[in-house]
Amino acid sequence: MVQSSASNVVPIQSVGVLPAGAAAPNFTLHVTPDQTLTMSDLLGRPVILAFYPADWSPVCGDQMALYNEILPEFRKFGAELLGVSVDGAWCHNAFAQSRHLHFPLLADFEPKGAVARQYGAYRTADGFCERALFVVDKTGVIAWSYCSPVAVNPGADGILQALEDLPK
Amino acid sequence: MAALKIPITAEDHARGPASADVTLVEYGDYECPYCGQAYSIVQEVQKQFGKRLRLVFRNFPLSEMHPYAEAAAEVAEFAGAQGKFWEMHDKLYENQTRLGEALYFDLADKLKLSSTALLQALEQRTFEARVRADFKGGVRSGVNGTPTFFINGHRHDGSFDLETLVSAIHQAMGTPKSA
Image (cartoon, rainbow over all chains, first blue to last red):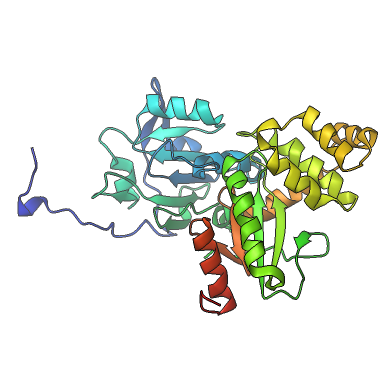
């Protein structure tokens, strides 16, 4: 049950999210119970990857609901927004319906957190994603990244600035 | 830390003198229950600080989640164009569970505002641009939900219960909590 061998020690803190200039690791994740989305299919336009701890956070205007409201601003830059958490596709489905979300939520569910780990955005001790943001340019390179304290919703000002700073 | 990017101007709805030691900016949504809670807390904060505090309210309607929020914001702006912003703002929060056209016209009546003019403003979306401008400015400043407060231009990331807000304002004033 509980694994306690020294070889299995996991870092409490992640080593940091992938920085600007790094290639965005490709992935394929479930976007609905029977559909997947592959990151590289979105090459040619900017992508906003928003890793977040969990669906159903109990506040108005939680991070995903906020981004949903700001979606038109993101789309002005031709950007695609993807939310990523370790919740399963059915859970995402219910959450997206309840909040009327108009962008995909990806399930980093099995193996749990595998994509988040690749981006340095997994909280091993907690078993969920960091609140980590990435703006990936149209060639698949990370143009900007930011990891917020997990309790602080980072808002969208950094994302919009990064989109604005992308070469035209 | 996120900072207020849109400076406060004469166009803003402000309560309290521009010379106040501290300016508290609230980005709020009339339908958001947390803003409803914050309404009475902010009133208490104003009572405690009096003229040392200026309160500014800006619109941040989360329309996807709150179907009445946008129209309520436009109603408050309509009243504001006639010098009655705060009266309407207060009444909207005090009647938050009854948001809807019947309430808007009832409140307009109580505030002696023309219901014909209100109808026209809502139909023609006269104040939509103003509300959107507040919203967009809020996004740029790092508003991350409702309510979001800025104390002297810095986003307040703590809780907005009375004690926390009061202590954050004291800190911004550089005065001890007991002052």
